[in-house]
Length: 528
Image (cartoon, rainbow, N blue to C red; front, side, top):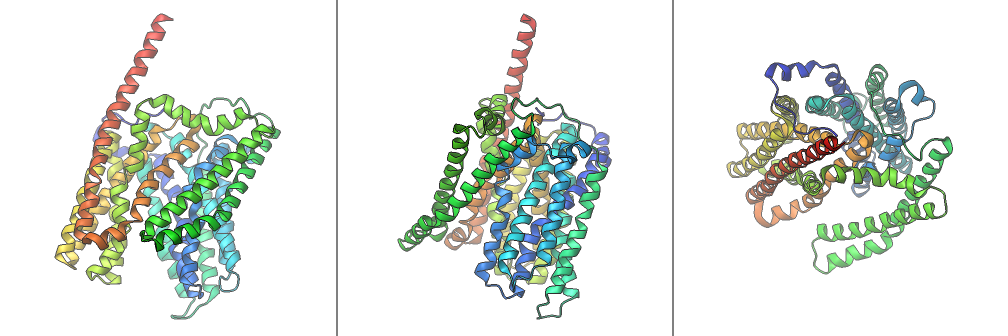
């Protein structure tokens, strides 16, 4: 168990963390993780529109990234299963990492050599493959980051990873579009231009592959499994996993015949579209998950997989977290679920707000995207530095406070109109605070994991942290229409206030829980 509240360190020790080899490694890992995401989202969207794909169809491609939201489903495979042959050569984490990166390169090339104007279905399959491989890489990188360095370095590791991730997004966003533009005349569609652009992105992924081959495998003392010993054990578990995934997909497809009419009926009955979509989507997800759980249970009943194997893989990581944190576990999970609420709820309306306020595309690109990117990177390193110096929990509180305060600046900006100086000032404050908060938050999540269940537990945390904020963010447009931008931004600042209480409460309860466990252990030792 990691300690999330690291001790106060000197400024010299804090600055030296910048040049630690593991910290530098995470910069390149972050770049490798940041490249695939935009090749599924914005970059691909532009390509599809140029190819003449309908706008409604383009939005469906965002589903290719669903793997990021459900990566906790197959994270246990990465925690438990050694990859054949490569495991003996590279180790558990590096072997899975190299496989994921090769999968990403293969999926990018698959997309690059597919013309969506001629074969949209094949492009969809390639995008889904990229989403799955990229989510797998994220699982392994997160586990590697937590296992490769002491808790004191986690904040700086997070900062370096965020910076690399942002650079990777630039490469896959502006970089890919620039390359495509070099081989394509304005106003025309040339498939070869996109093939070259995506080919260059596949080549850029070589940075991640080289990094994986150079770094050392983390040295970790894991608890031996009671059920995974022979090849047949892994095969039985993989069969169970495959059957549950198939059940989930089939249920998800066929429940549309129930949920789509329900959504239409609710909307026609006067319910706002976002709420109707949320209700229908929740029912669809619940039915799909129930079908998957039912199939998993049936596999244990017929003897395909022992019940203990399923419990060790999926139940044990959750039980371990609850056992370690006791009553504090509920507060910690609540904090994880709402920590980023102010940023995410406000963020979905940001670009629309800039446009409505009267800023040009060029101004938005220069200030929000380019300048804002550098401020985010600076904020992430500042967050890492301060977390090493003063401890993660203190900076976690500071990040939440600054995120709420900077949202009020957007309300002020709404009154001033299109003032470029004010725009730059608000973006600087917002992105600095966002980078700082994110670095501290990732370090905090890393400290919550048990080294025996690193991939699974962190995957659960990273899925929880955006679930509720994204659901609430779906109503942001409706809220702006109802109260206007100024009150909307003030509202997003106010919903960040309970987060401050949760940070303080979680920190206090976690400290008390650790003290109680230490006291109990000392008593047992005395009695022994």
